[in-house]
Length: 99
Image (cartoon, rainbow, N blue to C red):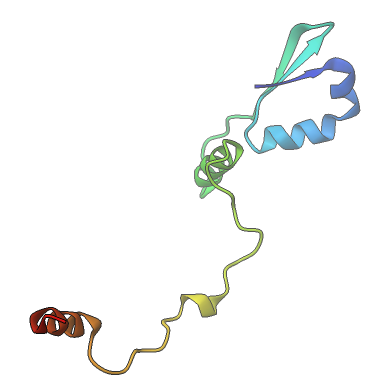
């Protein structure tokens, strides 16, 4: 859990709220004593909200890093087919011939 001094929290509240929105928890200290916690609101899961929350948690822990943009559709299409005999046949033939 991240900790912030009260004076810093007042000056950077927008930044702290954004961190909490992503799933982090922030403890506010006044003269070194914990006085409040900023925590995400626990809403009932909306469509896809649970997945977003889980992904945000994994991202915050450094397990994943989400893409900055969508993947190019071209990358998802199959590449060119290789001509000739399958590599497995060539390998079997080579082993049988003792080369």
